Length: 177
Image 1 (cartoon, helix red, strand yellow):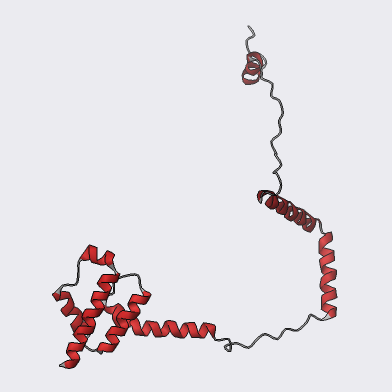
Image 2 (cartoon, rainbow, N blue to C red):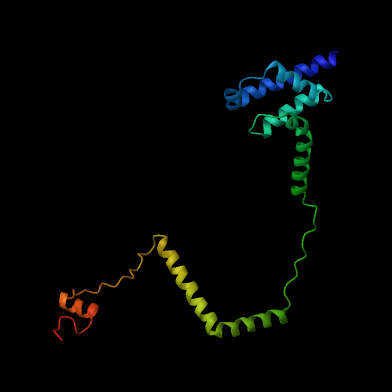
């Protein structure tokens, strides 16, 4: 009987804390009714009062939404999984440090030779020029240099109506033949 009273008290405190914390839910749906409280109580009857209190506390700390019965039932298990995942990610002993070996001199010389040959290729040279040009444009956007204008200021001469008619209708426009 005492266990049941403690369970009711833990559930009541948890739901009240959620109503205070999740004000948007409470303002939209109202506070927990007696019928809803009885549903919560019947669905969580197999949980101890301590687990109910811990579950509500974990849910309040880790969720932005008003809990469901399933959220409270699963809060402790989810917390344990998340904690185990965090410990696994920070465990530096999980994988050994890689053994760094220097590149053999013969391989290094071969690589440098291949890179020199590649620089002679016209396609590679063109790509390097494009890269340099892109870097210069990037610097100009940084405000260090004024950007070059690409618009040519060629003066335009207007065509006469007669010249436009000849272009549009052909050379024989306006002749009486």
